[in-house]
Length: 260
Image (cartoon, rainbow, N blue to C red; front, side, top):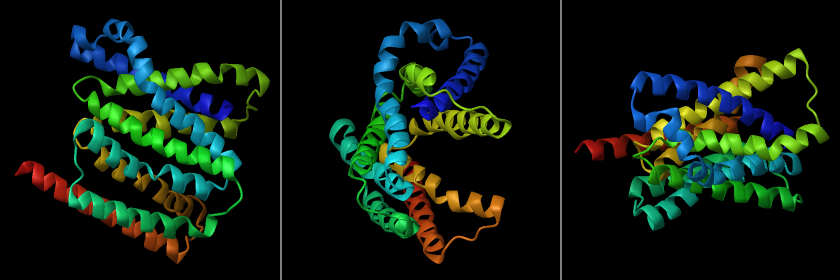
């Protein structure tokens, strides 16, 4: 909870700064901070799904193997496809179904060496986080005519408020390395990612947004290679290549269809 809250408070600060700059640039009453605050209760309710995603994934990552947590959370495109079909009437195209199958195979290859059994609670929480992650994309997509970033901003605020008691029970140990890590996680890995995801979800179907998001865990071995020089296994390279190819394929085909 301390980890989740620390990430979210920094992400909220980052997103609020972007929000202030945006409202000043637009000079529009509907995009003002005052207008956002009037909608605060509604935005908080809409943001609960993403708040649950962040908290559940961090806890799951402590209770089960990281590979299990990532695999189960990134089943989210399947949930996004089903929920989007039911609630938004965005029926997945054949390229989306193909990409879902290929991404699933690729994810298994990437994380097959790290999968483990026995941590049932962690696996269940990771699975639920995948459902809430997929549901979050549906909620944002349903609000595509509004400012979707505000929903994610309030999700981070809500996560911070929930985590406050845990800061007193388990205060984070501060060092130069931990401070830099928290800043990178909060501002860039979570804050900037939230801003970009909110922008993108307004322009592509929810299932495509979640398919594209599966590139995130695939890039982890790439960053490790660049920073530490540790070479990923062949299964990681093969699985990652399959995922990226599937996402590019479905994205390109969908984009061409929209243009026509």
